[in-house]
Image (cartoon, rainbow, N blue to C red; front, side, top):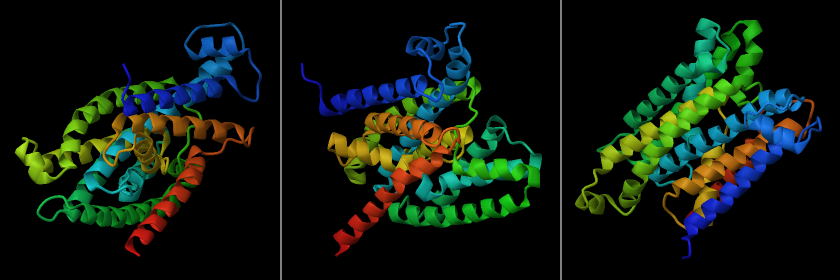
Length: 331
């Protein structure tokens, strides 16, 4: 029996992701026996330096980055399907900026710098921002272009609020606040991994449940209504779930840019479809952040560079390509 192309692509992407994770766990400035590294990464005690270096430093960071990449890609795939536009990622729509503004506001008000303590604020900010975007962009239903324009505008407002709050937070909190707005996987612990795994376990099955109906809606509202699907309710549900996934990701690492934009596009190109390709998108996002985190950790070692800088290096050229392509189509 021959597997369908999406299944084959997903298997290859999963193998790439697994390879990236294994390299991230076993490769580093301190040389360790690879077998000890793998044992420590899976929770076994080896009574060697690998227990601390891999079990407490590399593994929580790598697993968190990989799971956050999956969350971001899930969010991007849902929002791009709703807006029918490859630019409709949580970064571009302002959802991520809303989460960041709420988290920095929480830091300013309560003095908390722990990402776990900032999580409720980041999630609330993402959901509130998505509600504002839908409210402003609403015109007899959800209009994709109005949604994008409203999201860009609200995103700028949220970024302005974040910039102001960065000047207002106490001086001793400013470095942590600024670092959090870039997106970083430094100093992640097993609690982050647990929360990220729970977030993936909650959002991905719901997204898979919505995916089949979103494919129907992508063929037209009238056809969807004829098949018993309610397009407006479905889009609202997809936006809410996409915002929740983006907020959870931002809560765990801060806003990591461009993964939600790039991963679904790469997946669609590999699968050769114009519609939503959720599973390949999620695995692509996981692979991108696993590789970006390894690069952020090792390229300038011992200096730890925020992962957001590396994902921006990947995503910014792609965004320019999209704009150039759109200009070519209009011409």
